[in-house]
Image (cartoon, rainbow, N blue to C red; front, top):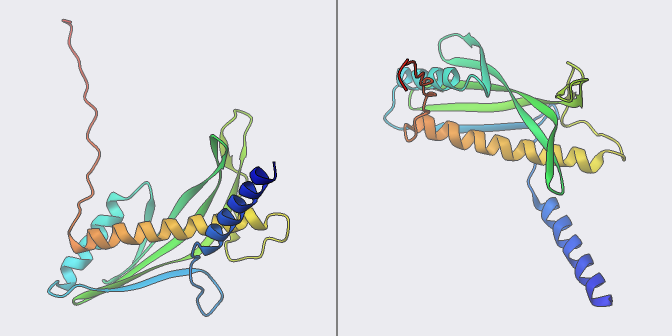
Length: 194
């Protein structure tokens, strides 16, 4: 019995240490989470990079919404990610994290950053669907208090993982290594003979 208890405590300690080692997003000078990266691409023109940013934002319409163009080389978009809560085997969405995406392009290099992360909790509506409980988001860097500290830390970790995956996909697309495939049109079978 003591052996089982000690193994259980050891596993709990390992899980806790592993969760603490997960990296969070860095903080900017205003105290907000930000993911910022400058990527050099030698031998590419500014026009090519502008076209790639526009194509990426237009083809990712479900994940990110193109908002505005500042000048001819700066782009602003907003996006959201759904955060799931998993309990044993079952999983359900517990909220969404909204963010702001900005990209700027110069000759041979570009930079992009994700910032203004805010969390909107979900609740069940009368039909059993999970919907946003409010339209006003809570900044992700805010201190949640003692009751929700563990869950809030999990939201921050999931946001960090998502931004790193998003940055990897964006850099691959900008380098021209991967293409985003557009969804295939539905095949409609219309015939009278079967």
